[in-house]
Length: 477
Ligand code: FRU
Image (cartoon, rainbow, N blue to C red; front, side, top):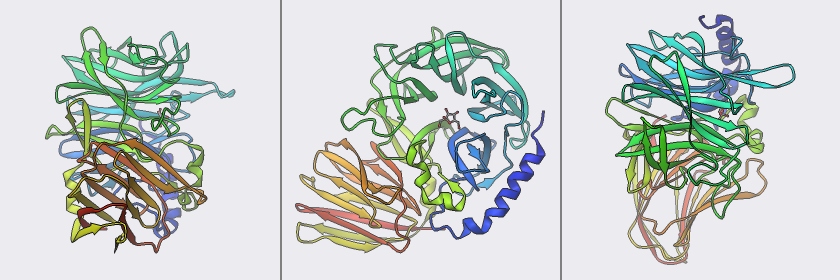
C-alpha cells in the first residue's frame, strides 16, 4: 500500500497557509531541524544511505498538540543543508490509524526499511500496538507492509519504538515496553529475514539486573557498540526526582554495559542522564559511512508547560538538537557537536576576559552564534554567564546550574549537576535554543528559551578572579 496522496496534499496546503505566519516568527530556528508547521517530537529512522543523511521525525502537521503522528522526512548531504521530503509514513492504515509512532531505519539489499509502531485507539480510547514495516527503493517513497510483530503476552499496549540492527548475522529489534506488573523494560525480538520476528524478552528494565524500581514505562531504546562497550539508551518514565537528578518530567539517559547477542543478556552499570538541560528527549543514534556514531534528540519534552511556548501562536512547536558525535571516555559517553557545523561560522571575535568581583564583561552576540570559553584558571567560587538576558549558567566550583525564564514568562527555573572542574564551554545559540557542551562534551545542557527579540548581550561575571579566552562566531543564516 502506498501513501495516501490526499494526506500529502493537505500537508502542502497547511504549509502554504502558514508560510507568512512562520516567516515573521523571530523564534523560528535556523540550523536546527524543526517542523515545517505543526508539532515535531522524536527523531526517527536516522540513517546515512548512498551519501544522503535521512532524518525522519514524529510530526503532527495540523496541530501543535500530540495527535496522530506522521513521519516527516528531511534529507541532507552535509548535516547542515536540509531538504524537506514528502511525509514518509502517514496514519492511513487500520494498524496505524492513530499514529505512525517512533521507529528506525535500516538498509538491506539496496532498499531502505522502516520499522515503526502503529498506534491504534478504539472508540473507548483503548490502545493497540503493532510493530510495522515499510520498504522503499528510492529512500523517499515507502510501501507499507503492515505489522511484523504483535503484542506478546505479559505486556500492556505501551509497547513501541522498534530500533532494528544487525549483529552476528541476525536482525535484532529492541523496543520500549511496560510489563503487566507496570514496570518499564527494554525488550528484544530477533529475525532471520526482517519479516518473521520472534519475541525474546527483556534485557533490562525496572526491577531487572538489580536496578530496583526504575519507572513504569521505558520509551525509545537504542543499543549499540561504542569503543568496545555496549551502550543502552532508554527514556524511563516515572522516575522520582533524586537530588539534582531526574527533574524533567521524563528522563533520557544510558547504561554502559556488555550485551551477549547469543544469550540475549545485558549486564550494565548505573543509569546516567545524557543531557542536563530542560529540553532533551527520545535520542536516537546511527552510524555513518565514516564509522561515526551520531546522535540527534528531540529538543523538547512532553510536559504541561509545552503549550506555553510562544511559537504555538505561529502554528509550530519544537525542534531537534544539533547532530552530536558520541565517543567513550572511561565509562562515560562524551558528546561533541558534529564538526560539519563549523562550516556555519563566518566571522569570529576573540576576547581575552579578566573577571574579578568589580569587573564584569559585556559584549553583543547575534541570535545565531557559537561561543567558546576556555578557562585559564580553576574557578573556586561563583562564575556566571548570561545569554540574551534570559539563560544563565552558574558554576560555583562544585555545581553547574542552568537557569532560564519559564515559558509562561513568570519566574525562573533551574537544572543542576555536580561538576568537579570547569575547563571549557562550547555554546550553540539558535534563535530560541541553546546547547552547552561542557569540558569537551562530558556534560551537555540543551534548552529552548524565548528571549526578548532585541536582547543581544552576553555577560560574564565572577566572585573571584577568573581569566578566560572567549571566541564568538557569528553563524550563517
Ligand atoms: C516519545 C514517544 C514515543 C512514541 C512517540 C509518539 O516521545 O512517546 O514513545 O512512539 O513519542 O509520538
